[in-house]
Image (cartoon, rainbow, N blue to C red; front, side, top):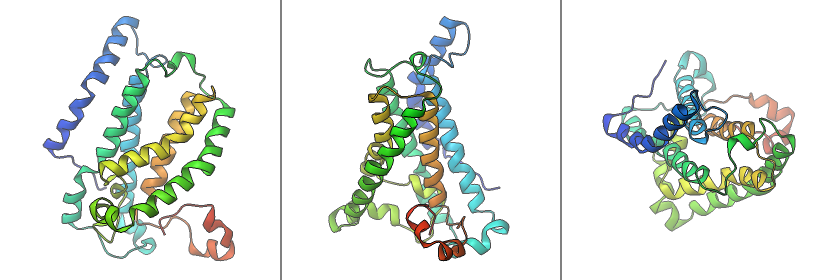
Length: 242
């Protein structure tokens, strides 16, 4: 199984999580137990680990040629130059976690103890906002990034190589990371502003976003093309690497 090995210099970025970890330790000592039900900082650390694992698993699966050789979208493989270039794939995840840490420590964000584990109305709001706001916003933002100045200065980095891998999903500039953050978090913001946020919505929405994004860049087709030949309308409903 292929593993992602982060170079020592890149590991220093994770020192930025020192205050977040320190907050968890402080709450742990004060409560005498792991503050799973009352600490957003702990949830952010858990989400960071789960998100990284999601990309790692798709990266590993995409490199299992004995499984994926006949289902690859682009036959070209990933060479060492691409691997070296895309070492900083986790910058997007690091930045989003730090932004979230600032938000959850503000007074405007509800404490986890005030949230339910599940709220169907919140999920409904998030789905509606995803379809009505996030998807169109991402589509037009992505089209704008393919225009001359924006493409040459920003988005061309993301298209440095013909063959993609799961980690290519995170290989973007800070501007693109901010755009992705706004687009991806809009449904969460809407659900929380409506008073129907939940812990499961945070985990489910973010991890599903990462799962689909890493799958889309895995260069491995997960649904047979015959399915879309038989049911053409599914092309507009299902996200696939091709």
